[in-house]
Length: 421
RNA sequence: GUGGCUGUAGCUCAGUUGGCAGAGCACAAGGUUGUGGUCCUUGGAGUCGCGGGUUCGAGCCCCGUCAGCCACCCCA
Image (spheres, rainbow, N blue to C red):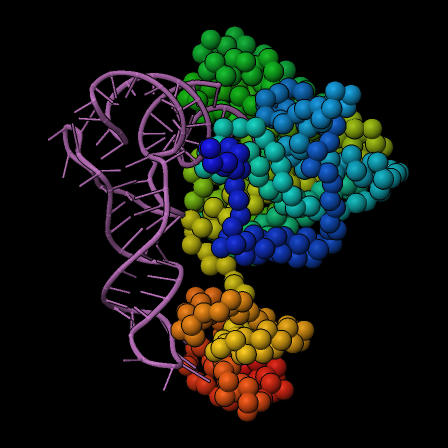
């Protein structure tokens, strides 16, 4: 019988790693709420149609990376969410949170995303993202608030070697004009493009700018720049974003070739990379999407947000040897010498827990020596030692595991001893 | 989806021209009545990823398959 293993591209978070996850998640919540974003939780699957209309029919994510299926012959097609924004937009429309133009909603989420890809470092079929979305504010300040929130999140997590790149492809009209110009420029040079980019030329030409293939880089060298096709409004918006970032003393570079994989972005785009990640070095990215709400059936409402990968953040922290804070509550281990003591300690342990003391003990008989070894391995701060003599005296021994000191105390004194030091 | 590398104990890995499955760490018990970290002794633990083939005999050679890693692609 073959062993059942975790499905390809999925990972278990074991007890030894969960404190790191808890730290990241807690930091995300703290920063998001500091910026006055509230949590939203949406389903991990949605109608397939949502992602086709939201993320874009021609994107790689929708074309070849979704988990899509029909749970029953009579059901509609559903898709495990490949990203967070589309579901959030659906939910805020559906529940009337942006019922009228001018409604303002600021939300954040933490949860899994699913993409059917070939796994490698920093790339899984289930990965988790912390993301935020801000609806209703067209001002560049809103773009910058999201960026600053994201950078503050990384700062508090302790990530180093961060690089923020930004770009603007302009509003829908600017983007369309630029796309046409790019296609017009590249079509005569089609034969010198990579095979992938020849396909992209019809399907998603802007992504050719992002290609790592030297042939594509050469072909794009003299290509028109997106900045020259921005409408006056888009140009002014982007200029203001740059001013505000500079004013906030955020380091960034403008990268005219930065293009992201979702069709819904307009105007500002950004991406953050970190050291220690290998080829998949983006830990988060975002942008403005002023047409998405309307295209999913809501009132015309601007939006902007980002998604940040938790697994990639953890890889970066690991590579950069960033220490993660561990438990601070002291652990008390009860050690029993004999059966009577074990029954005594079982009751004492329950009393300690009721009073908020983290306590544990061996539940089956073992030698005192073995019990101490386990207490040591579990990094207990204190041991309570009970044998027949302690029971008859109505006392317990309290041992400080760091110093080895032992003192005899009554059970009534225990809690104050353990909580004061 | 494409290419390259790798799968042996819980972990890290050795295993010679094909000839009895190994080490370190970890885990468990003990080292004279009830005390941890160091040390010593002993012990348990494996379908050598899985399935075929060649051979008297396969962890080792051949084919297939699955998984991991790295890169492309894509992106968090």
